[in-house]
Structures are given as structure tokens and as C-alpha cells.
Image 1 (cartoon, rainbow, N blue to C red):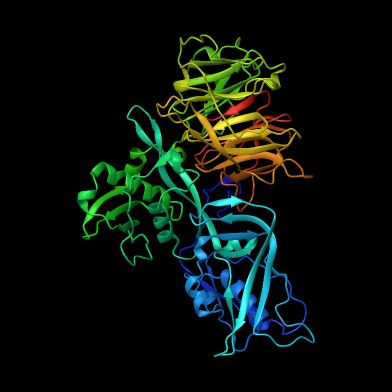
Image 2 (cartoon, rainbow, N blue to C red):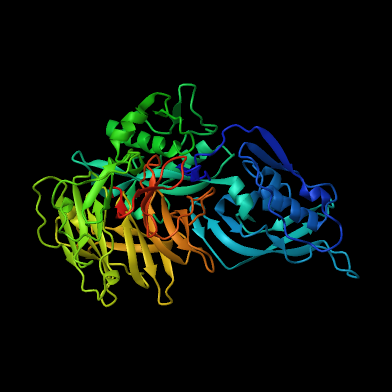
Length: 613
């Protein structure tokens, strides 16, 4: 995956993929396998430059079971598009029935061959042997290319036989899927966001559909662009599927034998589909092209336009990058006008996002006055309204960011015994709904306030086990990040899917909670920092406090984290990668991290920094 911050500048995940191979590395470990001695772990291949393609060697004549196993495992880590070399280690029947695309199992280290695959001393020669692959699981990638953290031991049997006809050993019994060590996985795969539209959410006065990122893993040097188009056409992953829709009609696919999709010298990509023009309305075609463009810009940032071509070779529609941004609301394309925080008088102040100075001015309206006692704030994504928690964390208010606005009554109140047991920092989604959690240990709950004005509704979280300590809704309004503390005091970062009632009267709920940072056990602050990632402050077991980027699917982002900062209490990031990170530190107040620079002090007495959202 691409580095998240290089010299202080954030980069979108998945954008470091190389398109042309500049070299070839042959995996030939099996050629030097000993004929005797103990079997050891299959070491993961050292990380190679992303432009280097790695190919495996076929089995050597007369290779024994141990050599066949070693060669096959190394062939799984190569850049062979269809695993043709790996199949040469299999019997004819096994080669026909083995399905490597079913899953990828990632182990902490390379898989070890637990059982000696040679006949023991003094034993009769045999034409059949069983080996056991073993290791410690880190993650799995399923047939939909969705990543999921995993743990526990991995043990799978692999059976080998010696052909009576050829005298060669081959694998004739093995599980579907592939297995490899973590470093090989990071070299072979890259994380890419594919895009769909929120099923029941629109944004803005024009009712734009809201783009939702669905991260998947693809083999980075195996025609990644064609892989991603196929994945997009196959539909969303099962976790996200219930809350998004696709512009593509059911059954849409690439035309037969299409491969090697790439932009032309005008940075335009033509995608040949199996659709007839009569099947595609102009508005729907624009949505389809928008999904393709948003998805493939993860792989090639220079892509400027997409043309969809029908089954008869005629153009269905085309779409430029500029038109795509107006066709759908896209979180990472929205650059905030201002950074907001509270000054030493607990007033809401702001400064232009691109400012290099340290001066901030009170916002127009009541939150810019000095007598409201604000503790935390959230500014709507259109920057027209603000929500503030005051009265020592007891009350949530909403007001206009315009002169002459009034405060009105509190929309949500908390009866928590202390300020830390009361309301969290609120957050807004793209459709204008406001979210806040009450940390009252006697009655903890999550609320949504539709359009920031309606009566607060309690949100059901059937799978919640513990107390919510923080809650931040994604811009798309279909995912929410929660910091949840369990009975042992461990604070985990979880992602939940937001299910709205859709007129059924069932209310809004957050379901299918999953970990976004499985190795962090004390998450103390977090912020959305992209369409499918967050910035989290926390510590691993026995470790020190650190700041890092995490993916919503729980995968590890490759590359450096933001520079160390002591005493961090809150952080603010934007989906727009060009915007500096901002934090509140007990030691330094409000600080920011511009591109290519170190942390800089902004306001010694300021607290609670936020960008819109």
C-alpha cells in the first residue's frame, strides 16, 4: 500500500502502484532445497521495489516431496497472473480443481512445513505422503477481495503422491486459496477503494448521490486496473452491500477476454462493457462512469476521463474528472474552508485552512461569544451550522454560523456524574445529520439528530459490548467509528454500518461492528482521515502512545506515521489529503502538521480542534 505520510504529506492509499515492470526476479528457492535435514519455515521473500515482477521456477526433475512443497509455496508469492507455475506442482486433477481466487490467508511469517515430507530413516519407500502447513494467522482476504483481521493458529494438510507413470512427485490434495507470509502479502497486494453510492443518502440542495469507499485488496502487478474494474462490476463487499447501490445494471461485465486496461496518451480510459445502449439511460451512465473514475484514480492519479463502450463498440457515455466531482458528493474531494477550535474563553474561532499564520477570529453568531462555556464542537460539512457541547458536557446545542443566530434549547442532555461521563464530541455526515454519544455509565447511548434540528433519536447498537467513549460518523453517513471501552478498561476502535429504517419504523441502528485497529488496545483519540481510513492515537500492549493511520477494514497501512507528539488529547484530520493534520496537546495547545514540515504551534491556549464534519 502507499505510504500515508512522506515527509509530513499524506498520500491516498493504494496510489503507489507501479504500472510497468522494470525488472524480473525469479523465485528459485526450491532449486537449493536440501535432500535431507530438518525442514524450516518458508521464509517470506524480501520486499522488492514495486516495479519488480517476481516469477517462480517450475518443479525440478526428480524433486522430492519437500522440494515440491517449497517450490509450490514460493510460486504462490509470484506475480504469475493465473498461478500457472504453481499448478505445475499439482497433479493434473488437482490443477483443474484448485481455486486460488477463493481466499488468501496471511500468516505472521512464511508458512512452515510442520511434518517432515520425507520417509523416515529405516522406513520403506512410499509413493504417498501428507505434509502439514502451519503458522499464526494475521488476516484473510476472501473471494470478494475483502480484508479481515484474523488470529489463532493455521494448520492445513497437503497430500502428495508420486506418479506411477512419470515417477514425479506432485501435490494431489490441498485446500483452495493461497497462503503466504505478511511481507509477501504486502509486496504482492495493494489496497484500493472502489466506489458505490449510499442507498438512502443524498447531499446538498441538488440531492447529489454520496460516494462510499469500499476497500479491497488486489494483486498490484497483475493487471490491477482490469482487476479493479471487474471487482467494481461484481458489486460491493458483503459488509457494505446492505447500505450502498451501484449504477451498473445487474449482470454488467467487461466484454469477453478484455485485459490490460490502461489510459491512453490523453489520460483517457475506455472500458468495453457487455451492455447495449438501450439498457443504459444517460443519467445512469454518468453514475457508472463516476464509479469507474473514482475507483481507478486510486491506481493512476493522472486519469482524467473515462469512456464506457457498449457491446456493439459504440460509446455509451464519457465523463471527465471535473464532471464526476459534480455528479456525486465525494468526501475526499471536499476541501474545508476553515479550521475551527475553542480559544481560552471557550469561544469557537476559525482560521483559513491554508493559512500559515496563527491568528484566529471568533465565528459569526452565538458560538463566537464568550459566555457559552463550550467544551467541544462540530461544524457541518457545508460550514453553515455548528453543534457545541456545553454546560460541562451536559448539553448539546446547534446554531447557525451567521450573525444574529439564536441558541435555543439543548437537543440532547446527559446526566453523567462527571464531565468525562457525559456527551462526546459531536459529528456531522454529508446529508446534514448530527451524531453524538452519551457516556453516562448508567445509561450510555448513541443519538442521531436528523438535519441537526429534529428531535434526537436513540440509535440501537445490538452488538455493543462496553461503553462508547467517542463516536465519529463518516462523511458518507453509512459508517461510524466508535471507541468502545470494555470491562477490563481496554479501549478499541470499531467500525459499524449504519442501517436507517427506510420508513419501516424500525429506527436507525449500527450493526456488524468490526475492529479497525486490532493491535491497539488503548485508543484515546481518532478522526476520519480519508474515504476509508482514520487517524488514531493509541498504544499497543506494553507499548507507548503513538499516532497512526488505520484502514476501516483493519488492514495495516504501509509507510511512516505522523511525527511523534506528546500529550495528545484530540486530533483533527480532513478527508482532503492536502489539508494539514491538527491536534490538541496538553503541552503545546493547538498544533498543526503541514505538508513536508514538522509540528508547528498555532495557539497555546486553544483546545478541541475540528475540521467540518
